[in-house]
Length: 339
Ligand code: GDD
Ligand code: MG
Image (cartoon, rainbow, N blue to C red; front, side, top):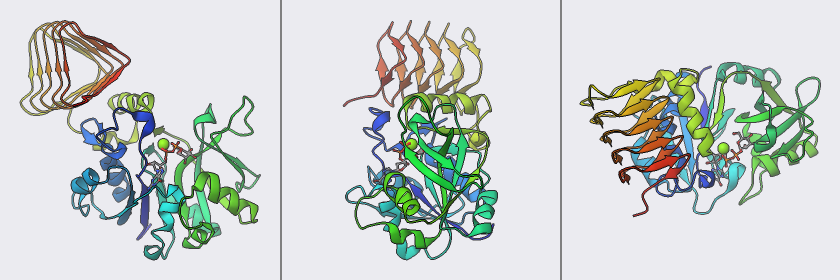
């Protein structure tokens, strides 16, 4: 594929993941004990992307500190931090001086099995202003609906379509290949690809192409999807499995009377006490203490969580440093420390 630049949109406030995103921006949320954005960057580097811009806004510091110039990710990283949100296309527009060739844009929260080379080839065949990766889903209402003509060109783009009868089951996968010229249609200030730019470009008679692909898709922007991403990775059904950390960290301790079922990942120095039952898919961070007679099922615990004896945790996300009292019952909840 050669040299290619990617812009990763990672400035959103992660509202639908609150309270998990109160102290951590969405790209830094741990997924199997690694910040989510690491998976995206490693996959892009493997696909031959050599330079990526991170368009940031909400809580940028921890991201910049963690990733630096990309030395551990296999590509060169640069940052653009918005003082006020510029929206998805507004953020890319601000990078215009850096973009002089065909480039890739990614929503920073998606996990896909898109073959980037095929996507870029599809784009270069026709050299339209843009090519959108699209895929089929049962319910498009949480996404951007894409209606195409017989040749695969976009005829309509409807963000978060309402109503029971959809004209298409194809959605915007949140990955585009664009020519810098398309940014001429983006006004200064706040604007969105989904609700401003794409409709405007289509109105003006310019064609947008699509690349239809099939395979795994997850947008981890909701708690439900964040949990299902863990489930899919732990079951080996998601493409980033190859980048996931080892099943068992160093210096873990598991009492011989504990029962472990299904896929489970344990962070470094995590301790499982007597008669605990762990039912995967389950991800535990570093230095967690799971006290005796507790049951943990299909959940995600971040680092330094202390679960009191006799507790039950199921289908939940427990943030770093949380202490659960004995006999706690956390079922389908998202708990973070407020102090
Ligand atoms: N820099 C910057 N500035 N980034 C932003 C801004 C902003 O003002 N607003 C949103 N983003 C980033 C978010 O951080 C996220 O990574 C990405 O843009 C998409 O925003 P979401 O808030 O996650 O959008 P969505 O999930 O509701 O819908 C989008 O993704 C779907 C696929 O998952 C749309 O693009 C849909 O059309 C698409 O189907
Ligand atoms: Mg999203």
